[in-house]
Length: 150
Image (cartoon, rainbow, N blue to C red; front, side):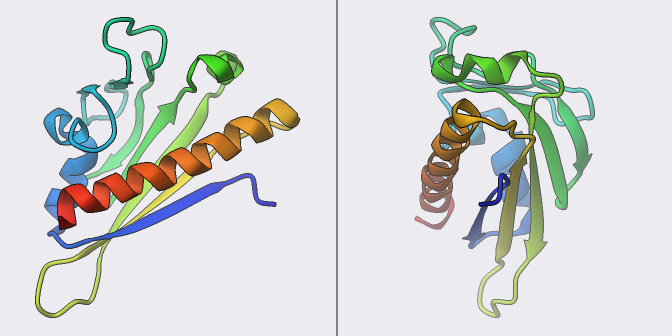
């Protein structure tokens, strides 16, 4: 079994909007997280909060953007929730890369989005975390498709 999580979505929108869904706080809050604090520049924050009342508990607090090429690529560090706290103590952290490509639909602008989540360790606790995030990204991308495609 591959230790890389792969997820994709077809969004019926231009590249600029698809990219913004991952880089603009108010848009991230429509499909991925309750509160976002993202600075879309290299070394900028990529902090998402699922429990804003306790920002250290279930968040990507401290995560950074590692690469950005507008409308093409966004890469950032990732942390796990409390049950996978060990993920947050590794160096490097797990890593997410998202690629954006125009797709060939004639009638409407369309963007294919591909996500790779890498950096998984070995052992049963890591496999449990990887399985959790494979499901979480699948659910999140379904939310993304709904937010964009209706």
